[in-house]
Image (cartoon, rainbow, N blue to C red):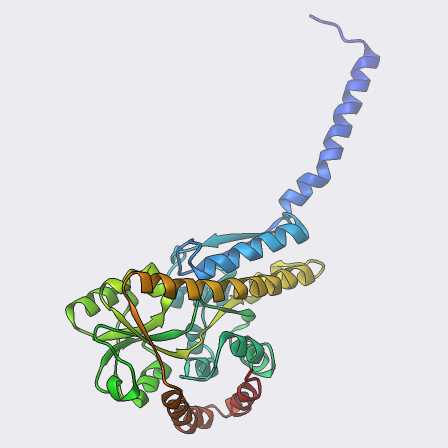
Length: 342
């Protein structure tokens, strides 16, 4: 048996104790790291608006607070369908989600105003309006109804336009055309007013529906058309740019409560900066998607200024006015959106 002198033994024990104590703060930091479960319906792909935003948030948080807040990203509906995830965010089993604004109209119907055709002229206009009184009021309504908070209004990769098999270049030519639309009243009524035949179909069935003639076309953004290879079943785009659909990032009450008050300013700044960064990328991605679709044989036809002015006037006098009557709190919000035009 090897004998260790008492003095060496005491020194060794003291050194070991100091080593443990030195590592203790790091251990505590590791144990107290906050993990937020973040859901998306899109693929984890550089051409997906959700993923690009999340990447920027993760990088911003890392730079600001190290590992104190971790974002665990679950793409491609891994945590469930969006309608189910909304409920999970409400109860706190999922902390955050990124999505289009439409899904939250199921909780706070006033948010449905953002799906009305020709409400926004551009994503710059949408951003300016939603960072003002309109966005603040819609957020407050959602908070009252669900406890959820809209952290930010970001951008999808380009406006939504009309894609068809046969060329459509005017309001006269859209009459009677069967278009797949999202199954929401705002989308359906928008295209009824334009003279088309709106046909709600799940996105997963769209390719086959267009291929087999169930619909003559659909409305969507160029990046999604490209990513989903929908250019294989349609060859023409009428650049209506009828909807600059905001992308929303929402956190539930339990998710927000996980973030200590001392870290919350850094978290909110990281969110804000991610949106600023993603908006710049979104603009470039939208243009690049159109250029790539053109290379693949898609024809693009700008909407005439007279058609745009006529349909926007019709939307404002009928759809927007009817919506404001149904939900009076939105009347000043429409005025605020108009005042924010850039």
